Image (tube, rainbow, N blue to C red; front, side):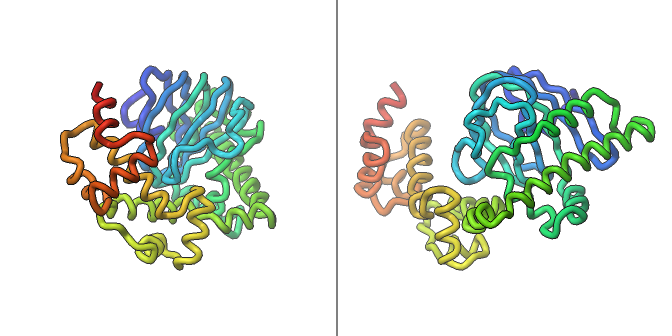
Length: 302
């Protein structure tokens, strides 16, 4: 596999068995990934990625801006055809426990937009309903496996390319159907109360970039393009935390990294990660970790 081809699947876990090939004529790639336990960062890609389990018993954790968590329904991620969708332009931290054999579609977002406009009134935006949970359907495993076995890329003959395009359309159509099903009143109500992945990413990136400046709720909501009331309710529904709690947790996480990696005085470190003073930092850090910062640093370096 060339480095260019590997880019379609993001950062490959160390020791993984990985192969990539092109499918159809619209720039879709299909990557076969076999691995055991790993943690890796998938950079933001201009593609929707859809990971389909073929075999193995694993428990995936993913962070796409809302904290490291197991996607809903992935607690027992061991069924052939179970899939997890990651939005375009979204980096993802993955931590996978157990053995794993999967096929990963990388769908260019412009192609997804064109195709889904034909399938659903919401277009590609409908896929936002699917990014937080596992999509289960044996057809995903069957189609992706068939495409993997055949020469269906842009260099194939006309029949091969048509076969690839048809398979891609079938998978996207099935995802569109699942997205429409997810718009039933009960599911849609829950989805409506949560932030879209894009809005959540904008909000958390804004808070990260201004961690030392104590951003207001009004500023964070504006970064997400929402009213304060709607944003506060939707952010808590998405993350289980208020924006203040999320920012406080991020400050503690950032402080842990600085304590372990630098000799920065505690008073300066406290200001740099957004606490008013060293006393405020020490109290918050002890509540979060059970250990004062100086003691935590000593243990981290022992």
